Each structure stands twice: as C-alpha cells, then as structure tokens.
Image 1 (cartoon, rainbow, N blue to C red):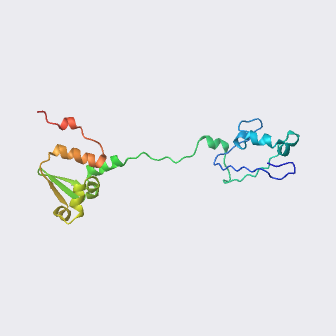
Image 2: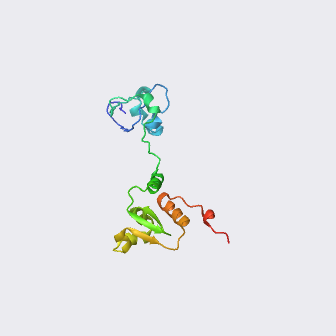
Image 3: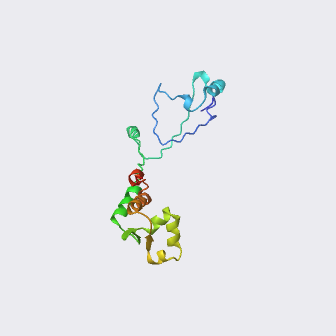
Amino acid sequence: MLNVEGKITYTYTRNSSRVYRFQPRFGGGYKMFILGDFLFSKAQNLLPDDSLTLFCEVSIVQDYLNISDQRSKPSIQVPRCTLAEELGELQENGSFTDCSLVLAGQEFWAHKAILAAYSSVFKAMFEYDMEESRENRVEIHDLEPQVFRAMMDFIYTGKGPNLHSMASIA
C-alpha cells in the first residue's frame, strides 16, 4: 500500500499455484490481505480522500494458465495398490521361485525372500548355513496340506483363511 507521499508502507506477499481473477465488487476483498482494524487505524496516512492506493507486482510462474483449467484440478493419481494380488499371482504361477517346500509327499514352490519376510523361522533357515539354505528345500512335518495352503495364501496375499472350514468337528 502506498501512503500519502506515494511510498510503500505496507507489503503483503501471497504465493499461490491458483489463478485469481480480481473483479470490482467481487468477494475476497481486503480481508484476504489486510485486517480492517489496521487499515482504518492508519486512515489518515493510507486513505487520503477515502482512496486507497495499491501498488501490485505480479510474478508469473507459468507462461499460460487458463482460469477454466483450474476447475479440473490437475493432480497426481496414485494407483490402487495391487501388491497383494500380484504376489498372489506370483505364488500361483510359480514364477521366479527359488525354493521348494515338501509336505506330505507334495512339493510346493516358493520365494525365499517372501517367506523370510513373513516368518522368522524361514528367515533363520535361509539366512544361516543350514541344510534348508544349501539345498533350497524345506521339509515340513505334521501339517495338513489344506492348512499349509492357507498359510501360504496368507503369507503371499495377507488375506486370512476361512478358519471355520478348516476346523475339524469333534
């Protein structure tokens, strides 16, 4: 704002990525920039003849921005996380497996990194110089294949099994 002598007495800076269109008698007004109490308390120095003189310096960051473009806010769309589905597919199709799990005479292929990430037992087997690490083969005893499959589904997808269907009725 310029005072009676035409010197800048009050400075307000506003940075914005939005485009603002200033129109006569349009909302926003001084409340966006300066409090009325301040303005009217300095009326003698800032409002000679009830006129306020503003000096505006506008910096343009972009060469061109259409105000109508502002309504369709450009934003980065974060894709939906599909990691669980993709890991489930990786388990199903057996791509890039590097170890086998043998259970009740059946062989299941898996990924050591994924097993180790979810189980400290598997991690210890593969991390240290153990037979399972050297042979990339783990034999599992005393576990039913249905329970094992549910455990593997949970490890790969994070989806819990239907425990009621696995519980034996006594």
